[in-house]
Length: 108
Length: 122
Image (cartoon, rainbow over all chains, first blue to last red; front, side, top):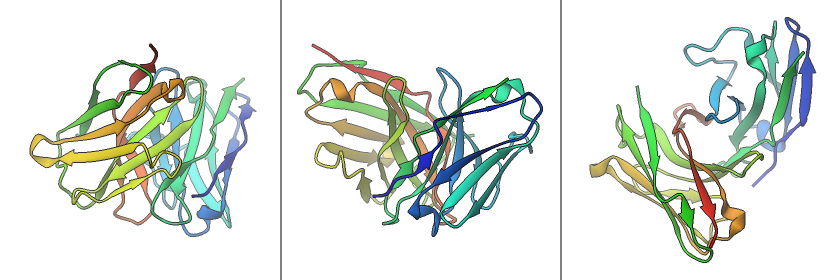
C-alpha cells in the first residue's frame, strides 16, 4: 500500500482562491480524485482524472498534478465550500485504493 | 441514476461479526466498468478504504483488514455485502458502500450510499 498526505487545515477568505494539496508516490502513475464532505453527509466527488468534474459541480473546482503532488484549487471560494476535502488514488500496487487524511477548509 | 443503500445492524457485540448489505438500484451491478466498494469513517476521522469486488467475484482488500474482511456479490439480488469478523470498539464507524469507476484506469468514486453507523459495544 501507500500513503497520501494532505495538510490538515486550510483557510480562505470569501471570494479568494485556495489550493489544497495531496502528496504521495502513487500519484506519479495514477491521477488523484477529490471529494468534498460536509458534516453528516456522504462524500461527494468534485474532481477526478485530468481535471474532470462530475455533472453539477461548479467550474470553480479544478484539479492539477505535478510529479507526486496533486492539487485541488477553488477559485472564488464560497461559504458553501466550507467542508472537509479528501484525495484518493490507486495505491502503488495498483490493486487498492488509498485516501489522504483530509483537509478541513474554512471560508472566512 | 444509480443509488446505493446500506442495510444491517447498527449495534454489534465485541468479538462478533459485522454484516452489512448494499442494494444497488437504477443501474447494473454486472458491469465491467466498476468495482463495488466498502469504505468506512471512524467518528471524527478520515476515510478508510476497506475493499472492493468486481462483478466476476474478484476481490481486493485493505492489507490492514484483510484477515478479517469478506466482500461478496449477489448479482441476482443486485446486492453486495461486507463481513468483518472479530470486531472491537475500534471498528465503530460509519460504513459506506460505493461504486468505484475503473474504466479510465484512474479510479474514482462517484456514487456513495448514505452511510450507516455501526457501533461495537456490549
